[in-house]
Length: 198
Image (cartoon, rainbow, N blue to C red; front, side):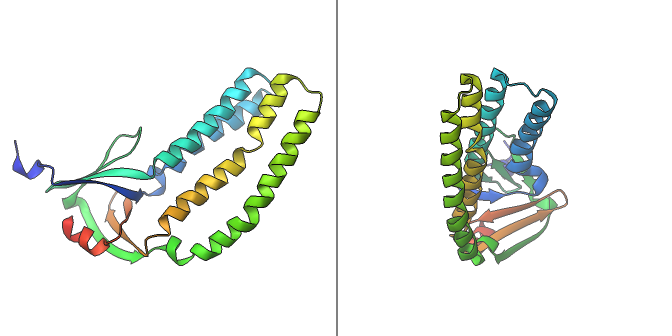
C-alpha cells in the first residue's frame, strides 16, 4: 500500500460548496422544478400531488442532513463525504489558494436574526389561519390533505435555511480551499490550525 494514501485524520466539519455542488442545486432545485412543471401541466388534484409535496419535505430534510460532512485528510488529498452524495475529492496538488476569511454569517447574524424574528411569526400565523380555513371548507379529503400539507412548506423551508445560516454564525472565521473546479468553505473553530493540518 502506498503510504502517501494512508488516512491521517477524519472528523465531522461544517462545509459549504460552490453553487453547482451545493445541496440547494442538487436537491431542492430539481425537485421543486419537477413538481411545479407537473402541477402546471396536470391541474387536477390527485394522490400524486400529495406525493410531490412529501418529496419536497424530504428534499428539505436532506438539505438539513447535508450540514455535517465527514472530512478525511491524507498526504495527497482531502475527501469530503456527504450524506447520499458521492464523495468530493480535492487533490492537494490542485489547490490554487487557501485563505482564512471573515465569516459573513457571523458578521451579519443579528440582522438575519431580527428578520427571522419578524417574518417567522407572520408566516406561522398565516399558515395556521390558512389551514383552519381549508379544514372548515367542504372540500374533498384529497384536496384538504394536499392543501394542509402544502401550506407550511415555504415556512418549513425558511426555518431550515435560517437554521443552516444560524449554525454557521458560531464561527467568526472560515477557511477557504480554492481549486480550478470549485471553492470549498470549512467552518471550524481554529482555521489556522486546520490549515496546518492540511
